[in-house]
Image 1 (cartoon, rainbow, N blue to C red):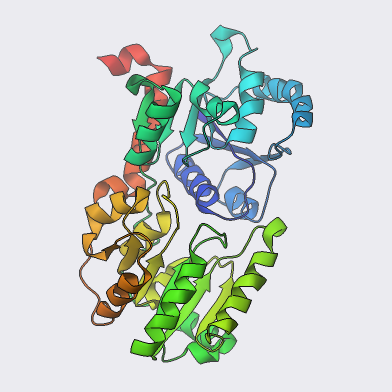
Image 2 (cartoon, rainbow, N blue to C red):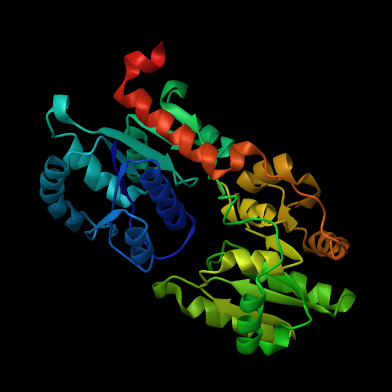
Length: 370
């Protein structure tokens, strides 16, 4: 099977990392994997793991982008993929306009994934035009059905899976700790409270800083670590957060380490991982990754975070936006780490098998119906 995945960029973020992981698994199972994007830091890893990358500026939201439609149509005719799997709205418009003009008998099968609770408008509706639609959680599936009228026969819920081999429960590697403490010597001996995720106003870093201020009064041995960076156009937001940390008296108690490729080791080092998005998040892969690494997670009880924690670690849920209750929950988890089990539905193995099943149903509907 030849699979073409399409997304805006390959820099950082859950969609990007998930695309690279899925591509690696496709290759491991003997399929041909191609990814089309505007490029980014993850291209090197993608290609090293056996996939081909094609770079085109499919990331921009502009009518001027329509000039790429003909070129994309020629590219699809040249590649002849069996499946096109699109993961974002801007490239989906270009792909759909190119795909629909291909001869019906020779078209690849078209799949989209709703990775978010997109705004309800004509621009977002293009994601529902795929032959099969994947939603990454039940709350996303309900949203898609309610707002875009996608029939259940064309909609499949497949949670974003965690790689249990990459995020296994064990102590962080000694050499990794040594390197970390060389760069951040003040972290040694501290109880780490981790906040992973892209720096964005809705991801909850501001609430996390308020929580850390409250926690300092109760557990001064705790130190906050924020892993993640802002998108290039929003680089100023990191400076705002650093300024807020100083204003809250946290300059010596919270460390920003930026984008990291070693997030699994940070999960293992942490005593608690925090998830504090201020609006419903469609899934939140940091939750299942941290749980798979053996570290408890505390999160607001809404959206996809509620679904995954209710299934795997319900004791980590807190009423939405209640920072005091969140602080108390984190403080209650400063003892020995609890036993945690990530259910099979949230694993990479399940995601791969379920997604391939969607592909096969499209390619061989008569066989899969038997």
